[in-house]
Amino acid sequence: MQTIITSKTREVVISDTGPTILIGERINPTGKKRLQAELLAGRLDLVRQEAVQQVEAGADILDVNVGATGVDEVAVLPEAVKAIMQVTDVPLCLDSSNPRALEAALKVYEGRALVNSVTAEEASLTDILPLVKEHGCAVIGLTMDEKGIPRDAGRRVELAHYLVDRATRIGIPRQDIVIDCLNMPVAASTDGAGPLIEAIIEVRSQLGLNMTIGASNISFGLPDRDLLNTVFLSFAIQIGVTCPVVDVAKVRKYALAADALLGKDPHMRRFIHDFRTRQKQA
Amino acid sequence: MQTIITSKTREVVISDTGPTILIGERINPTGKKRLQAELLAGRLDLVRQEAVQQVEAGADILDVNVGATGVDEVAVLPEAVKAIMQVTDVPLCLDSSNPRALEAALKVYEGRALVNSVTAEEASLTDILPLVKEHGCAVIGLTMDEKGIPRDAGRRVELAHYLVDRATRIGIPRQDIVIDCLNMPVAASTDGAGPLIEAIIEVRSQLGLNMTIGASNISFGLPDRDLLNTVFLSFAIQIGVTCPVVDVAKVRKYALAADALLGKDPHMRRFIHDFRTRQKQA
Image (cartoon, rainbow over all chains, first blue to last red; front, top):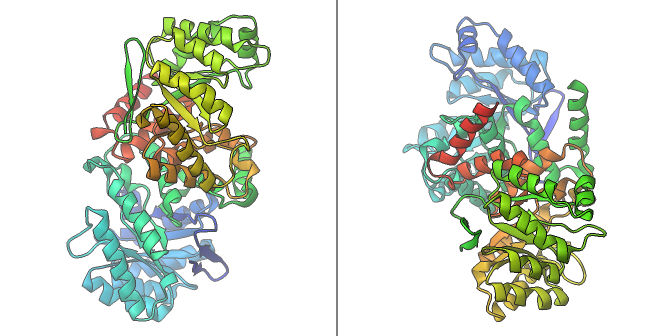
């Protein structure tokens, strides 16, 4: 199953046979006071800077999220998208739960965006899916509904089926739906990431869709978060997550190692090239 | 399924619910000229030193291999075992393909050893299994036969069944059989570790046994071997390898992170303790 995301000049193919596609997570003000302040003041310098740095670090797609208290997403999201398109040419993932902000961003985006995201909540389905259909883009479906994120794997799998049903019913092709089974901090759980892993394996096996996951939340509240995040990323890639949302500079080498081990990097060309590049920089 | 390995004073339980058990790989002269020279000269200082260092690094079990050109394993293996028992109290994994060397080592070993290994070759089954039965110990079964290591997963799974059949037929309990699906360098393959991973998942699912794997060979011939080995170890633990053979000092923190994520470390106690210990040492 191939999901194709484009910018004006580039095409990124997400699939289970090709390389793992890394979606850069850093354009997101959550927990970042300086970025929050800039966005509130209507400045986009830091957004541009994060965009350039993530692309230099090897990001394939950039997530763009400007949601913070006091920020008018409907005004700022399209401005951020325009600013990023001026400094990079990688495709974008438009990240908001506000349908009007997504609509405004889709109008200015030059290419086939990945919309992040729709949930199985009725309001979200009603607002977001027609936008995705109208713009012919792709969408990330989150396995959560009005009751929140289910704790068990089975219910998340049901929600994934439901999201696909609802999207395909209005004419969105299956391959344009990417499922996110939603990470929760393992510190709050007794069975670790077990239910999440089970959900990813089942959705992948039953629906065959491309899968994403935010690979940084899992370690919230624990020490040595980078270590936990990289090990979790290895898990995720192994079980079929094809386009994780990550801190690219920190984890790209682990993703390349995973691809090399899983036969997703013929002759280990990307792995060896990255190794040599890192050696030169060191 | 629990496999219990003991020394005179310690018991190690290998199971899929408990922590990942790390078998230290470093007492092995393959590729180590200094250790080869010492063993040829009948000296065991380096063996003692490697034993102590691996236990300090957190090894749960130590693999003991003295096989090198010119070394009389029948004489040296029991001497090495005695030397190691003098300096540490962790249980041992007696590693030789020579049945007489294993017999001599089992005679001097105080505890319930893990024998490494028996293969599905008739000569190996005939020589090794009765020894395991006689000493009431546990054994690692390698999924290879007279034709070598099968390339495909299916044949490895068949060989695992065959090993279990042959062992249980002479009265070795199922829980005392640990399966090793055998790592091969991914550099020599076009589909990476795919067949190996598939074999491990299937053996685990069909037989429910404890599983080991050598986690360092996979990167042979490639750069940045430690990176590849640690990512492979994450894969292995996730799919059910319960007692990998590893360079403990290099990979223990990754194994602890994997256990924490997989719900095999209640309240992340071991992970957090290890993090604090590493911080103090830094």
